[in-house]
Image (cartoon, rainbow, N blue to C red; front, side, top):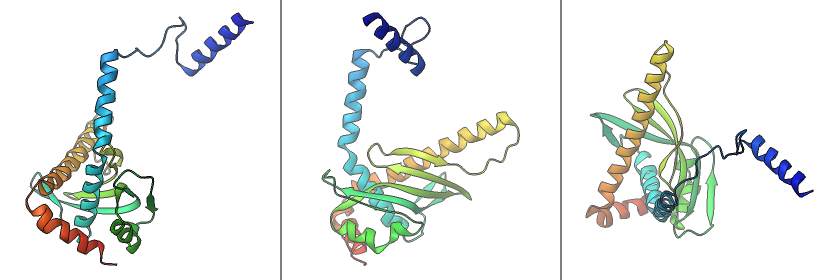
Length: 207
């Protein structure tokens, strides 16, 4: 009976792709030191989630005017929040609010939630640069692009399409980095407490 169970478990592991025909694991086991480093990096990033939430909230504030937020390669970048937006309490509590719809990120409901201490945790954002439009999803936990819809490809050959897609994906990442850098610059400036925070509070109160 035990041998039969063992055989069944081996077949199950094979069907899942966990082991090969030789019974060996198909994925290489990570070195314990590498696993520990990866866990430490993940913990560090999670510990800085509040900074990502501040950044996304600041970006929502800056984008409402429809003016360019930053310049990338000497060309303006405009930002529009245009879809589902999730807000969570800054102190890590489970309290959260979620809105959907093209104009919902700029609604009174969102500003009311912000005045109660919630911050933007994830959002769908449209970036426009040099007539190119990138639709991306951002998350404060790791502050990285979770998904992206790139501009329409112009090349026709398959190899050229691949190269163009890689260039567009890289540009989307670089533009996002430029937005984060602009936030960090303001966040660490003397004007943050004296001018920017009061302006944010005034904007949130516009309900």
